[in-house]
Structures are given as structure tokens and as C-alpha cells.
Length: 231
Length: 124
Image 1 (tube, rainbow over the protein chains, first blue to last red):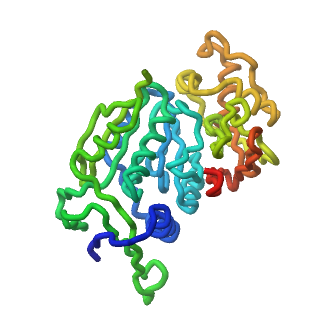
Image 2 (image 1 turned 120 degrees about the vertical axis):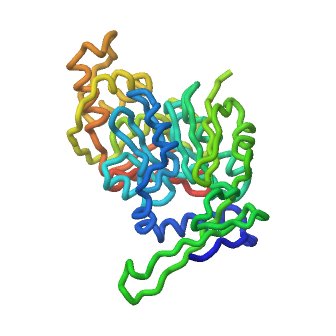
Image 3 (image 1 turned 90 degrees about the vertical axis):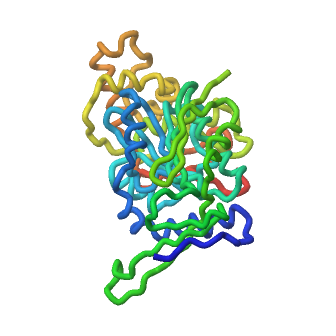
């Protein structure tokens, strides 16, 4: 397993995201989807708490791992067409969309989740804008759950981060054996901004019209629950 | 895409801001498919406040789908209403076609039930 490297790319944000996030996910979609099956308990518990008849959106839904249509109804959005296709094949409502420009009317949803998404955005302004959009699309008193990778990795695990830099490129290895027994492994690099303790809550705190009502650390991730509060 | 999802979608092209025109998006060449789903009345009744009923009526009329003009005072006791609602929002899928903004004219394509809501750079 190859280690992450500090990001020293001199690309502008949109290009960096295009080359080191969007295009990578499009290429690894099928392998990525096969490895996304175990739902995380904090997220499952948040979804289980939503009252029956709640309407929610998963921004950056990937292969639709968290989408539900019994008791509550969730639709998904993702920038990656092959991943959204997988959601469609599984019977979910999903659409191709940019998290920075959500195509929903304001206050449409009871809740929103965004899991392992905004750490792929290459500037504070973009990460903050993503949170603003999430808050915009939920109704007054609605909540948003955001999960991002932490700089502080608890488990010795398969990833090791040097604490000195928050912007990194993390390898994703597609085993050659997925194609045939002699094919070499393919390595792709994804851009991440790793969040420090308190950073996510502080970022959410800068977004007007909402409050952080819960925050925590789970399995190498920081998370917050944000509540929209109209004046 | 089910009609419940369409009821949440709006045009978001830069400077397209007339709420009467940018929502709901108008279907063009829509290919529909009815897919049966289990009905849950409590779910339907609690979901009602999230729906923009006026917009849903416009869309239902466009697609020739039967839907009552008004939400009854006690929807939980109105079986016919709940059945019509269930069929309209959860069982009616738009699989192909496009959605057009009545304000700026932008067309969002739908393929295999999946809408593409991405905009070109100059539209953001």
C-alpha cells in the first residue's frame, strides 16, 4: 500500500479538483463502489433518528450506500456519472450535480448528509460554500450531517499521515487482477484537505443562519451536525 | 426519477432568478414508466408539507396524471387521495426526456432515469 504524499501541485482549485478528484472517481467508479458497502454507525444512527416521512438528500452519495426509500425518502447527488448510474440501477433517485451549485429549491429537505465529500475541495471558500449550500436546501430547523477525514488518525490502519501538512494526495490502487491475472495494478492519486480538530465546526460556524448542534470524532473522521435556524 | 424528486428541482443558471419561471421545470419529450411501490400512508401524510402542491399540479397536468386540485383537510382519512398521491409521486418515473426552464430556456437532460443538472461554466 503506497503512502500519501504532501500536495505540492500548483494548479488552481477547479483544475486540481477536476484532475485529482472528479476524473479519478470516474475511472475508479466500479472498484470504488465495490469497496463501499459497510455503512458507518454514526451515520446510520442519524438516519434512523429522522421521523417517518422525512425527506433528505445525500450530497456526494457515491454508489448510494446511504440512500433509503422506506420510512424516509432520500435522493442522492454526485458529480460522478458512473457512480450516479449505480444508484439508478439500485432503484434510487439520484442526479448528477455539483455540490457547490445544488439544483434544489431552498428549504426543500428535512435533512441533508454529506459524507467524505468536502475534504476533496481545494480551498476554504469552496469547503465553506459547500456547507452553505447544504444549509440552504434544508428547511428551518432542519439538520445537516457532515463527515470529513481527520488529520489526526487514531487507528494505525492503512493510511498514515504526516501531521505537518493538511493538503495531501492519497493513492487509490485498482488491482490489476480486476482485469486479468497479468495486468498491473493502477494507482490514482486523490486530493484531500485533512481537517484539524475543531476546523470543521469552525468552518460551519462561519456560515450564517445555522448552529453546530453536535460534533465528534469517529473512525478517523471529524463530523458535525448543523441545524438551520432562520432568524 | 420519481416526481417527488422533480418537485424539489429548480433551475440554477446564473441570473435565472424568477421563482415563478425557474420552478417547476417543464418536461419535454418525457418517457414515463410506472413502477409499483408499497404504499405507506403515514409516510405520505408526513411527506405532504415538503411538496409544493401548486407545482405538482402543473407537472401532473403536463404529464396527464390524475391528481386532486386540493389537499383534503384530513388526508389521512382519504384513501382515494392517498392512492393518487402515492401513484403520482412515488410510482411515476421519468426515464428519458428533458426538463426545460420557463425562465432562461436551459434544458436539463434525463437519461436512464438520471437527470444531469450540471451547468456550463458561463452559466454558474
